[in-house]
Image (cartoon, rainbow, N blue to C red; front, side, top):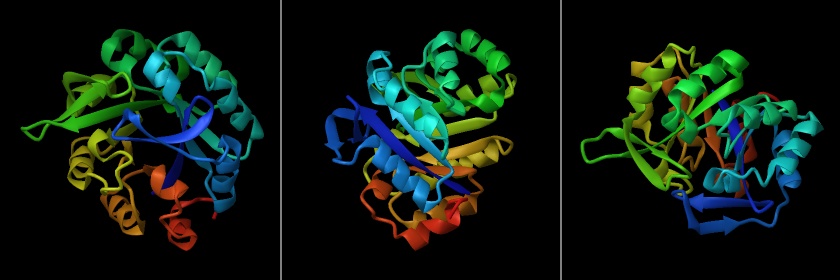
Length: 246
């Protein structure tokens, strides 16, 4: 399993949100480039970057920063936030970003997004599905920066895109994101059981090396972590086994 460090950008700064709440923001003094380089030196070969302004407002306000990080050429990037048109994906990938991460638009306009899979190839797109677990235990997809809740389940969405050649799914349990509460292991176990051919990326709640070991034990392709890594809660020697360049 690969550990993919996450960098969330808002207004040009590195931030973390608690459970997707824009009013519960932690802002860090590190510049995006300094944090990016820290992860590269640790051995990260892929980094996940989210434009939170884009996710909230549809405006890619942090695109110049993302383009500058991609131009460094020291790690592969997967990036999302506000990617709601073919043109926006084209322009992002043209900066050197390896994979575009698409979320809300995949729920709202599935026919259009299916065409993107044909246009760019399934390996260039990551389907980001953010979920909240309902009272029946079903993971329901949240959209638009997690402010809106759909009736669609995670399983509905993955099934819908399988025929398009879906390869990569980034799944976040919103209730655990930024909360250092541990990942939702039962959710990911069910995901792996239902769709074993998908390269699943787990996001939300990672707090220590034991969480990474548990996710690896499930067979996850990757784990995405932000807060625990930014705040140094996992020792460098504990994350080395999950970083390809360490």
